[in-house]
Length: 179
Image (cartoon, rainbow, N blue to C red):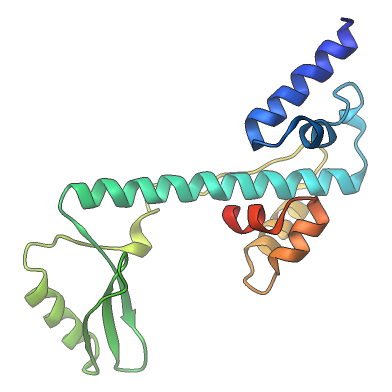
């Protein structure tokens, strides 16, 4: 096997390990490693979108692992907070159970948390990723400002999974899993 074939096989196997795709899809995604440096601009954008989605999935895995670790240590992961000018609610993040609610503002919220969680074992879901910086995704050939705009586009709830999937050639299910 020549150098060119070995390089291509390595690239395809790397892609298969990274994505879990079959050989045919991985080969298409891997492209030719000897010419990949001269990818078309559209291919660079597709590559960047895939990298952003992979980074989001990895960050979510870390976040979920942190939640499990906290729960094993006896913490309860809660959600909620202010829902109107004076209204608030506290819910269990895992089950959605409404733990408490009120319309007496911050003072009422603080009194409820003091009464219901005297040992400070509640942990708000918004703080699960406080210690983990968001991954910095870079793609060769992608201008950083364009990369940031693409990350914003992916992060918008108004961006349909179907649009992303069609553009990068992934299944809608795979895009949903990564977002």
